[in-house]
Length: 457
Picture 1 (cartoon, rainbow, N blue to C red):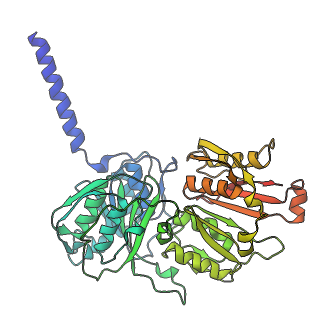
Picture 2 (tube, rainbow, N blue to C red; picture 1 turned 60 degrees about the horizontal axis):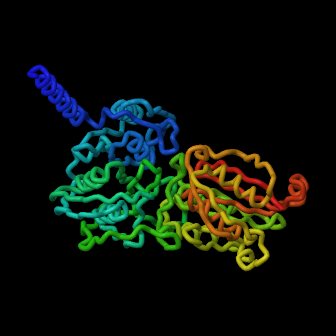
Picture 3 (cartoon, rainbow, N blue to C red; picture 1 turned 135 degrees about the vertical axis):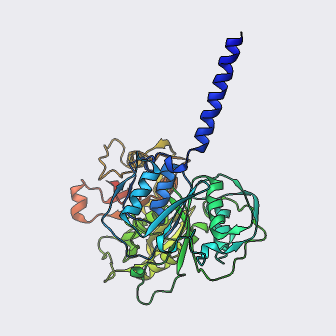
């Protein structure tokens, strides 16, 4: 009996020691997993999105203060399968302007020349009073973070980035840096970012001057970010009353206040015409749809480099788009931004108003959803995708609707995906003959720029 007791005591002791060792393990030693598309994560630039993706893949809250643009380029770090420490060491070796440090479970990357933990003049060292909120989400956290720099976000602008997690934020008096760290730590898998904005190269003559910095919260697990332009000079005034804002519902204007981000290569998006609506959907992380003018009319692209919309609110970017080609009008339909020729909105015989359905599919890929659309429009026809999107085999979506129009179906598909864009166009005589008399084409494009589609009668 004593030997059994002794064995039990030894086992309990070993278990407690093992648990203590696990708890003591630094977050820097965590392995980096795959990105939110379930692909190997590769870091080649230092941006809010890339650091957010790294934090999401390692399941570590992070912070990032960006240096002035102009650092080294043409470097590439394969992160998946390595420890976070190893990846960060490789990053600072590739761009020596940066240093990193773990701060109570949050990994913070800042420029070496003005590291927030060294330079006491850095705005991140401004003093903040104690903060106590019992039940907040990412949307409310963004309002708190914005207030640290004097920016006031209305509750209607709350964006939980597709994450319904609620958490408490209880912090003693400290610094702006400690509050930002406290926010991402309390949530568990967010990244905060403060970067000069817009980049000097993005400034176009005649464009409205934007705030000199952009503050973002990035949810690496979903690849989405919410940002606001800020200045480093205004005094701090935290919201006195921060009741949890309701989650944005389809049909509200909250998505119109979403900040348009940069492209995947970190360059700003410059619009030249309506054909670039799918790119706008990708960088704004908003479902969209676009109908192009008939082939008898020219597809307009303004000369030059285009107008920078990265850093704008989505509503301003859409206004810019329509100013480039006034033949179009945009509307928000149940959370989907739809851009169509003005005359199409009142055409009751339009193919997009064709009745289809009922519509029901569960946990299918974007490509499967397009196949479903073709089945409704071209029964018995085999669908050959133009080019399957990179995330089409990974992300799934579900739609359950009674009978409706084709417009209802494509909007519901884009909405269920979250950042897809549908494209409708009439075909010219040559293409109509090639497709056996089918005079319309419908496509869906994922945020990586590739898509799939089909022609129909």
